[in-house]
Image (cartoon, rainbow, N blue to C red; front, side):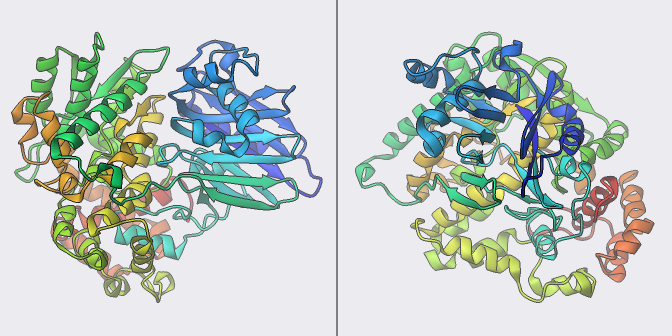
Length: 593
């Protein structure tokens, strides 16, 4: 887990080292253990290192193999690097025990197909000097980020959007289509767009080849089919439980690969509790777990310690509880905004930030339960899709998920920023209509897992953990588990109130109180039910001179929200005022837009 950056220059111009230096400096928190810069002709690479595998200098980056004519920067972890090393050993001499070097040799051996051999999370930038090209690749589920910007005849890339901005010259004007998405889907802006017109991101499961003459091409290398596999037609419910259990066990064990200890973020919900149970089942000794809680608000509890404590006792973990009073939570919001690659209005972003800060004092690597709801149909809007036809997926999803209708946008945005067309509905329609998803549930889970999730919970966890040099691994997003779940019958996923198959296999592993409880969440009541000092914080941001000059939102709409800070919520239960305020605070904090 690290921060990567670089510049590609064209037309015989040498790549600039100074922009790369600025980008790597802006990502120091992602890699506090080392740094490096390399340049050869039209390409310059930069790296910030968080040492997790091969802690020696032999694992440092940028990694260069002059004999092979390759150079590489890489962010992430390849969980099967030991297996690949053995497979490649007859053909190559290795000088480190790092997964980084395995990627270099894998590319030389298999070419662009090297990605098919990688099991893990990764964002890769690889310079192939002999072919005079740069190869970029992002992991299948978009766990590791990769941003791009075209600046003055060059292409720059980095692990974070603010790092690109720090390099200078980036177009930081607002993208109206991205703004429409942000206001429609809980602040989600799917790839390739970002909220800034001049910055894009490589979509998940994509390889991008850029040649020295500026020509480029993209290829999507992984698309699991959300249809029934004929070879599994005879499987019973017990067969599916057994298969998912085995696949999830493998996913958890894969993510123990490290030269440092691995802990678990234990919320007390089904997903993180199941990870603890599976690690105990695998015989993992001395497991360390972490939970966080906050003051209550609006008759809502601010913690779920009753459940996380239960799981910690059941499996004898070294458990750490962190309670953050509201007075301490408020100052952390500015720090969390600084850590956001893009504005994220989810109430639990700052909670993850504070939890990551506490965990980083003990460990460098943790496992997290993110992704289970998207993969196994755990959200409330998944259940109605069980009873509708395939072509009703769009309306079913929109009714339960969309924050606003397109017609309402004219009341929210100033005319300059209002898209005449319903670009968000068009995006959903095009994604849901693609072939390869058999039922309405399949289409929705594919949308959630491959389009929306990388830019909501996955990005949230990456940004907030890496702000403290903490690597978060997500077993529920294991490529084999996701492919298996994609072929699973819808009723075994979204049935039983959601995540049916996970709940049933958990009955052999977890206390029933954890399984049959109401669906959990990461509670931050003070942001769902705004109170002081957050109301003043919101008002100051929306009344700031920068906000007035930018004039994104209609003033009458903003004032109506401020008169009733807790009077407007989205269908998913998020505070509408907070969504607007986060965008404006993020733009001001990063001095963009």
